[in-house]
Length: 323
Image (cartoon, rainbow, N blue to C red; front, side, top):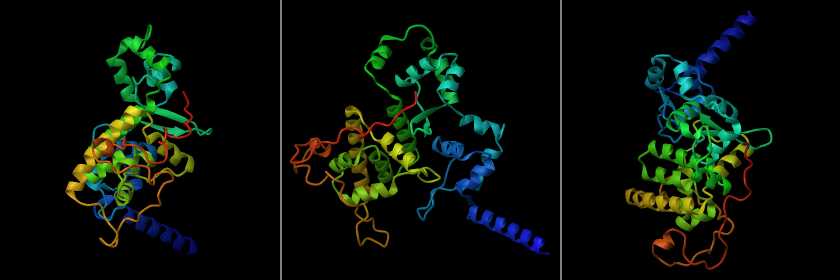
């Protein structure tokens, strides 16, 4: 009898959990991934690529997946293998095998910006290991077969000889473009761009602390939330920050343009607006009293004359990368 009651309790708990995961015609990310036959990383990538469309929670919680979206994907021809194939990733060794070239040549192509990574992970040595969409690797082979054999072109050799590595920059650009395509809200678009600048650079462009706090609050996160380990969070933060002068300038210009539209649409929340007012974060070291109040475009870009302080350079300590 005790066993029967225990089994019944377990079933009731499972049903309650399932009901909680599928409320209001939507499913939580974990539940949706299970129904679509995807692993956690595969589902997260599917959402990022727009293969799985999510619905934002009105209360500000994590995105959920509508039942119709799950049914749509499950009804597609070739499910679930077809969905898995669209998010299949390869590392350097497997990518080289797909192209029929050596891993060294594959790495050179990636460093030169010919192949863009779609995600990464940290190995046991906390080094970044880049991953590439298998289909994009094959598309590159069909698009530029001349780069798979023979001598590298002059422009590619020049980039590599200069020590250039375009993997992180191209990953950032692709990620930003996809995040921007998923929202029309001007403040959320500005939040995407704000995440590319380090705290000092961001304070130069957005001098209102309440606006910076709001941008930080609505910045998009992975569907399952931030990475669990401290090392992974630090790596994500570091890789997301622009580290080349022309890239930093370009992102500042884009952020200013988005902020103009955002401010015209509505004001960032202030203390006393409502019970969800955004708290002002503590000032980052080195961001106070850095700039004079000179107006104009250069001032808005954060390129005005310094009063005190020094410009932050790059991203600090470089992240190790596995070739």
